[in-house]
Image (cartoon, rainbow, N blue to C red; front, side, top):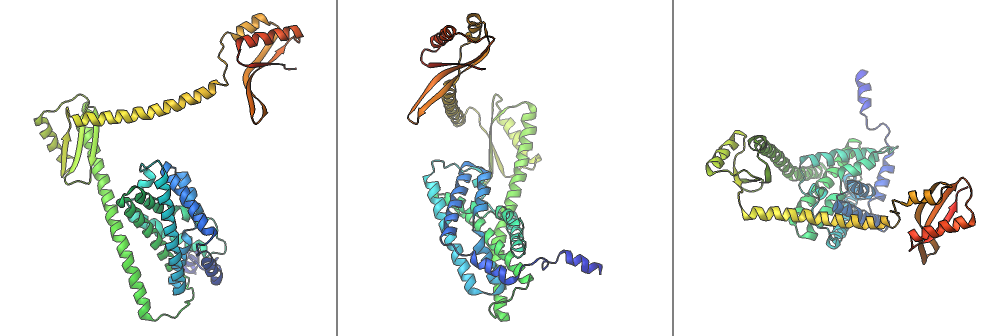
Length: 433
């Protein structure tokens, strides 16, 4: 009794929608025609902009808009019920969506003046086993939600977690700048996401016992299973290798950081330049210092110390009085100065706009108190006076409170005095009642 209650907690048939309703909904969302294609193209542009300016929020918005997941889920359902015409239709629409996405992102990045690879772009160029897990379990959540009567709110989360849009945009970026490694890495990540979402859909469809559309004999069913298993291996093995490489690189970076901190920084040597090249054989660690100059003997001793930190197969290069080093430093300084110059120019422009509406007359308050003692308090500022869309001019407006209302002569005197202070502007005097 207790076991049956426990099993009920994990029973996917509870809350399940009618199978014909689910299949109808899946089939209706597969096609990329008309509105769906326009939505996809717009989502690709939004995602490309987000990747280009390194905005996570914009990328997430694009993933929520994208209809890319529908044909992938359709393919998973088609495999699960052995509906081969539906499988063909799903794959055809997925290819159309993929081609359109690549084309739109390629055109965007070709036109865009910003070609630097931001962190959001680089994150999609080296997939690993963790991306497989995200795609698989994200796909499970998605298909479970699709088969419920109450769809709930997992679908938006699945769209974000499985991230189909950013890899496609990154692949388009790789094509636009001619970097085939970026293109291949991003496309590989996209294939991982597509296949494992499809696989998780297939598993849930089989588990929920969706009826087969076509009769398939045992031999053909085994053949389909073998093909799926082969694709799993083809996609998983490289991702495991990439995950292992990433782990080793992080371990190596940690060793380098410990080495530099202990051997140099803790001894008061200021590291001016540090560059690690992990992809060469042997690996390279280049360092330069602000003041300290090392003799050949000292360098040799430092190289021996590297082994104590577990750093092997690494060439240590300490750059001293090197023209290349000076060039690198000067280039960095020039880049910094260029960025600062652009920021300074923008700040000056904003200050100039702000100054149009500021009054910088420090003696104004003292003079008003002497000349017009009856004024208790006042406010003064520059306002835009708009007559029509083609006629706008600035006016000095002074609003005052007084113990006794100024006479027309005193008001005229105040107005003339303000005009002397601001000869280029018209003046408006207003008494606050």
